[in-house]
Length: 166
Image (spheres, rainbow, N blue to C red):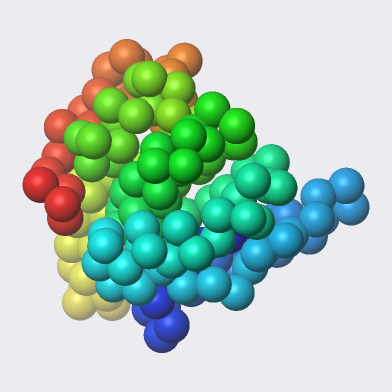
């Protein structure tokens, strides 16, 4: 399952489409939900997730493309006692979701590296101003966080950053 964020959000739409493209390469994986939207708040995301309970009970896994949809889905899965019944991958690492990862309620989280993003942004601007050719695509350093690598110092640096929900 995929619980999208909101229509028209370019960054999450690209995450969602990338997820669907990757899943499509696996013939043995069938998407049962891929066109539902969480909405712009945790409460809306929880309600949207609760509305999907029958499909969640059939699913083997779910992906949420941003912090708010991840938190809303987590709350719904907890209410329905489904946290241990499926693989759950979310995006961003607010403290409550990291705690859920530690407990095994979340399988993995995707996190960004804002420091690297800021550095590369300024470097690209300066290079452009100086007339240097700048790449069309720049790897911003996204990482997968699991229980196994949670204590890695490089991962820990990314987890100490503030999030939208804190």
